[in-house]
Length: 119
Image (cartoon, rainbow, N blue to C red; front, side):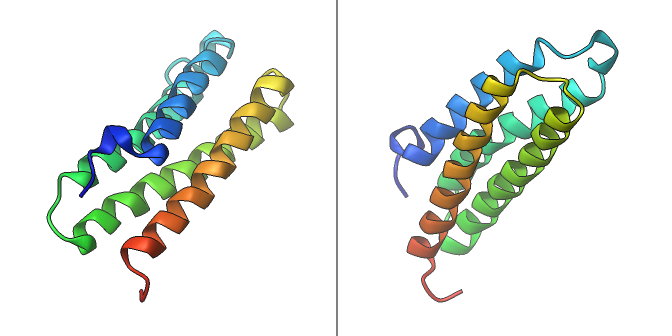
């Protein structure tokens, strides 16, 4: 498999992770061990699973980790949408983050199809 640091999906995952940390700094202090922790873990899971999967042998193992990364994207998206609804986050930052997450989801799905065209 490719060097994970060269993959656009990994780079975008890192960008999502950084922006998520920026957004999470503005959450209420009572959310430090709740929502803040959840969104930080979900965002870190995206590039981490892409990297871990790249070290695995075979397409089946790689796809497993890509699916976990994709699941983390959807998890993070759900949290951000909820935070927007509850007006817990700056709308401009949230829109940028949601746009990055949407792009990442689409790219991950396309990459998985490239690795395994006949699921």
